[in-house]
Length: 111
Image (cartoon, rainbow, N blue to C red; front, top):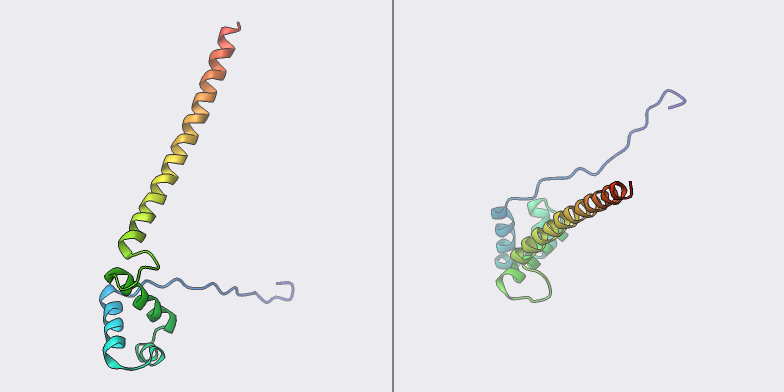
């Protein structure tokens, strides 16, 4: 900025996830076309790794694979983690309120 130029910072744009129907169609196309993973990804304009992940997730959900969490299990895990976070926050609030209460009570008894 010292020389009058502003610096641009590039930040990765977060994109919305592809619709479920698109992902399922891409996986179906890969499995039925006989084309390579790279070829299908290129045709659809998506990252090869995205397609690979969708195939893996489909196999987990259908029971063909057992080396990861299904979609349902991932949703449950996310909900449980959220619940734990809320419970921890509530516990911390109660700890502070209890400590403040007893500090006030012990102060009023010693008078």
